[in-house]
Structures are given as C-alpha cells and as structure tokens.
Image 1 (cartoon, rainbow, N blue to C red):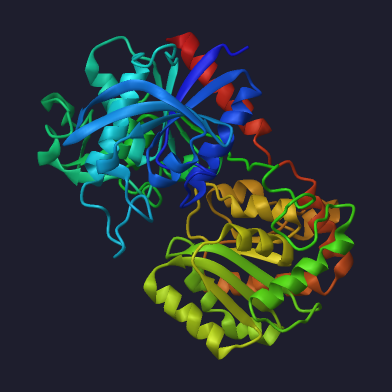
Image 2: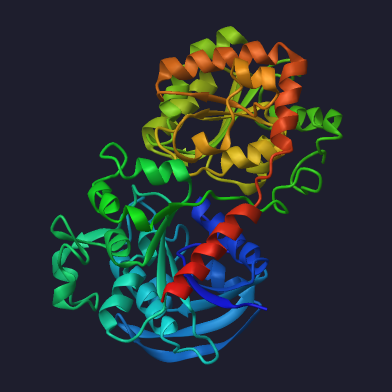
Length: 483
C-alpha cells in the first residue's frame, strides 16, 4: 500500500521516447519506487511516439487554450508506466528529436513547449485530475524546471518539490522579455527566483525554489558545488548545500540482463562466460573488424562530444594500433568528431569500426561483445554505460569523475591483491593519462586469470535500482513529514 504519491515531470521516458540516460532513469525509477511503497505517475509531452504507444487513456483535464491552441491532459498506461500525457499537437506533434529541428538547432518555441509541460505539472500538483493529489512533484532536468516556480508563486498550499539534475550543462536559458508570456509574475524575476545572469533560467528556477535537490551521484553532487564543474550555478548550490543529495542511478536489470537479452547473439551469465565469445565474433563482424578472438576489443556507446572525451580516445589511435587493440564505436554528435571517427575507420580497416547514430540493439551487442568499454568523460554526472558494462562483463575503463568515480573500483595493485577491482580509472581526463591506462588494460588482458576475475567481480556487482530507490523513498518520506 502506497503512503506517498509522486508526480514525476520528464521530457522523455524509456521505452516510449529516448535521447539519453534521462529517459532510462524516468522509465525505470517508478517501478523501483513501487517496491518501496511510493506511487509514481509521470507527466510527459504527447510526442507522436508517446501517443502511438498509449494502451489505455481517458481525459484527466479537459482541453483548454495553451500557447495558441487547445490542449488536454490524458491519463493512461504504456509499457507498464502510469502516465499523464499533455496532448498538445501544436507543441509536440513533430517528427524526430524531441528538442531539435532537422538542422540540429533547438526548436524556437522550446521555452513555451516546456513551460506548458511545467504549467500542467502545477495543475496536477494542485489536484486538477480527479482522484490524484500528489504529495511530491519531482521535476527532472531543465525541461521540468519551471514547475517549482509555478508552484511556488501560485500562493496555494502546495506539494513538496524535488528537482533532479541529470546534467548541469543543460540549463534552459531564455530571454527575460518572455517572463509574462511564460506566465510568471514580475516578482519571479529576481536572484531568489528565475533570474539567471539577466535571463530566465529554467534549471536555475528549480535549484532556487525546490524543497530538495538531488543529482545522480554523490561525487557529482560535490563537483557541481565547485567553480570548475558548477557551470555558473556553483554559488547557488553552495548556498543550498544542505538540501543537495547525490543518489546514484541504477539500471533496469531486466532490460539489461545478458542471460535473457533477446538483442544479443548468445545469452550468458557469470556462470556461463564461455558463451560470451560468440557475441564478440558477431560484434567484430558487425563493425567490419578482423575476426580475431585474441585481440582486445574496446567498445564505445556515447554521444560524440567534448564532454564525453572521445577526442582523447581518437588521440590514442596510433597507440591502439601498436597494442593490437580493436575499437567499435556507436554514437552521434559533433560533426568534427563524427568526421574524425569515420576517417579513422577508413584509415584502419579491420581495427576501427563506427556506426553513426543510436541503435538500442547495437548498444546491447557492444556491451555483450566488447572486452572493455571506454568512457573517457571530462565530466559525467552518473553514467549508465559503465553500469551496463559491469552487468555484461565488459571491463569499464573510465575517467575518475562524477558517477564514474563512484561506480568503478580501480584495479590498482592493492585492489588486485584484495580481489576487489571491477575496472580501470584514470585521472586527470587527458589523452596521455587515458593512453597510459589503455596500456595498463593491455597488460591485464595478457593475464587472463586476472582479467576474468575483474569481469566476474563486475558481473556480481548490484547495479540495480534497489539501493537508489530506497534512498529516494527516504528523501520523499522525510520531505512529506517536514511539510
């Protein structure tokens, strides 16, 4: 029996629509919280992909004008999720990426598209849908950030508010002259409100006005309170430090389960690792790599961006060739990195392969077939790729930042002596330090008994939502008691 009801507000949710890890978290956390006695309903925009997958829906809030045309709120289910869907075709009925036009630029009306989502969250927070009155409104990232402001400035007794930062680099900053059009009162444009260096800050509003702030790993929660990683918000976060908590993400260990994964060539588990090489052979074939079972095969599943540090890996291609290492990369992003990656694949046939874009099935095949997964991020709030790698027996090679630092035990000499290593870390995130760590990986690869022990340690690590869900449940209950 649930004792706390939560309205989550998100801009994407797996498996309905996904551009990144936010969707994975939004899709998996409600079921994990249900196990803790927390009931979650999630408000999402009515994108075409969402509308097409709703299994049952009824009108929760009748249509009314919203930024130029009528919009209504549906309540329904899809993929086992309890959803409120903002059915506003003029805002969301667009093909492709939910945030970007075909040319890669933001939709010009994004401030209104996500303000509408937040205003709907306010109405649901005050009980506008029959039979639903949440104790907590949980807003994820900048797209949901104004919900805290709308609730705060409404004046009525409101539910508790929690803001979760998935990546502080994305903040949602828009011109100050939109204040009235966004339905915010004049007093909201202040240092204590939504004002952010002369603009309206969606994420800043959430951080200033929410009762609690969480982010997706303890180390990232500390990093964002420093000028180096605070993205201009470190002062505010230091001021509100007592309300900031880092709760590590988990992964859905039913979706990511190598023993039953329908997307991989040969299912396996920690007891049947002899089956795993079939996945490596299939991956080499998929990426046009030489069919060499003895070569150390590195996998990458990532946005191709400065943050993710893929340039550090590209700077080590000559080293990889000297070490006899293969590389398979799945990703999309910055045109220059895409160009360099495609050139590397053309110049090094059989050793480097690339698929540009995102494909969920290929992501699973890389985790199942690569010997190691490389994540050289310059900053990383949590990261889910390394958690999947642990589960699938691919050794994570990670920069010692954010959630990567919190989730991987470096196989240094003392860890090897104690039998507790699960991967390799390097710091600082530079090409030289990554190169030295890739050399260390090659030395470990040459000692199969040690390598296999590290793989088994990783596969036996609990990367599920069980512990994080318990921490979220405690935070929600504590906030309800305080209010």
